[in-house]
Length: 344
Ligand SMILES: [Zn+2]
Ligand SMILES: [Zn+2]
Image (cartoon, rainbow, N blue to C red; front, side):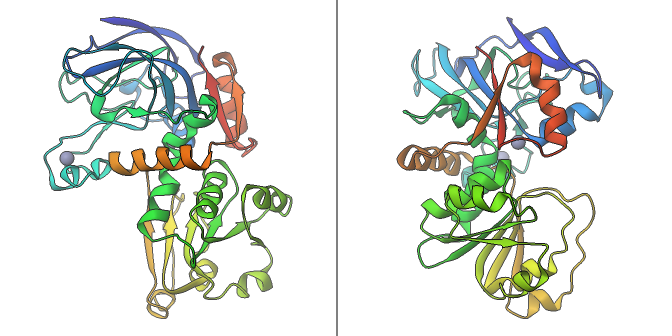
């Protein structure tokens, strides 16, 4: 077995501490990656804060960047020294219709998550990227965009792909208008993507002070969501509204902001059920959709798009012994805009 150092919670709610554990020995199609950076996602905060005690010690982290240090005998796509990235899925059944369509995130057998997932071969539990090394099947390894700061690339693997995928799926392009709700870890990337895809980009924020930042990221316009008049004035403006807040927002003003055939996309998991007036969907023939990561083809496309357009996340870099403080700040929304753990 491969001994590595991880930064783990020993039990639900416990502080993050160094922990030595074993990765699987590389299989023929595996690649061993020495990690340099891993993002901190809201999912990580929820994962260490609660859940099944049997799943602990738990090493979170699913936005990884690093360098190939070992290649299995049958792995052909990567070579030692390649800059690479790993996201929140590390395996899937590979044969169901969704897997065959490149939508492994929707695998009917449920994909193997990067941490807390069941290894399809050994049955063991996967551990995440707040660690010195990761062993992964090369099918779920990606080339990291050259020329970008690896610390800024890491968050693309979850925050990036989660926002890029629905913008592409619902047709963000020149001549369309995209509304992005929230200017945070996901939202700041969504604004960059929407702008780079050529869409008119409107940032919706409850914090007036974030308007300036949103414009700097590429927003053409800023709407302050607490201003009811401003919100009402957005009627039928947007082809896509991407809600990145994960908050229990009233969907009504956002549905009203959708054009005919428009789509409200939820990127977070609101803490309570949505309540909506069916007429707000019927009038305008609108729809509501969800997003959470993506399959391999879209992930690859997103990374190539970022390389072409020079898009990375704005990150605050923390050392592993600063993860607890970062998690606490993340809980208050106090980060500009994503934490990236320096694992070197
Ligand atoms: Zn995530
Ligand atoms: Zn499948």
